[in-house]
Length: 283
Image (tube, rainbow, N blue to C red; front, side, top):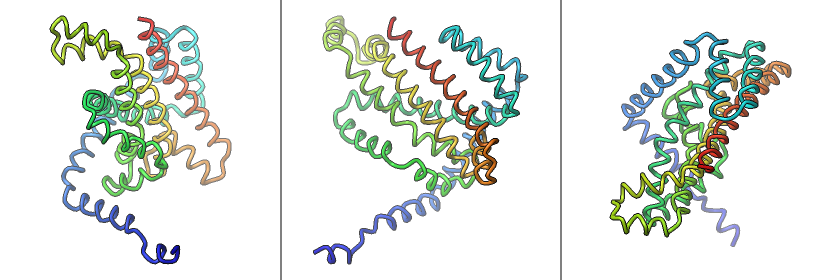
């Protein structure tokens, strides 16, 4: 029986290749438009904002923002950590990585929160979306690089595209979870006062679900950062390229320095988003 099963291989790989070939051939103009838009967003975040401001002034601004949004400890850590990154001559690749994280996170939030709301409101959509989320979260990260390169070639744009696909799932899941966890008594009270569906969503459900949504955004940012580093394999640049070059050339020291910069950036982003979520929960 096992021999009979092995005689016929499921053409799963061939089907995927055919779909990708069809999309790249017939929707090339769509991917070109998306590529242009993403490239503009990356240029805006990196050149106009992050690198447009002198490094020391940017470090001070980030430290102050960290202090205000989180606490004094996070502000001091941000100041010291970013000064270490600057001292290691990794400021430009760090800002390149941060621009990709900001771009991919923004896209993930703009897409993920509305999809999460739809899954919470509609049980049929929930049953369709959740298995897809399970698949996306269990698929190895490297797999997302293959269609990204097929659609957009090499560079930062396919890196952002792969990052969005990889990191959007927590935003969808926790938005859905946060809205579903709103007490039914409050929903009934809103209905009793004659609230419309939009009023109920905006004034009751989203404010109460905000701490859970922020937790999803926190996970999205962390996944975005990890995927942006992996995307260096397809020419995305940033700190991932420094790590990748260090591995290729067996330069352990330079790869370790870039790894430290990634950890510092991850800790700053994590502490800020966690603090914002905690404050919203207390409110």
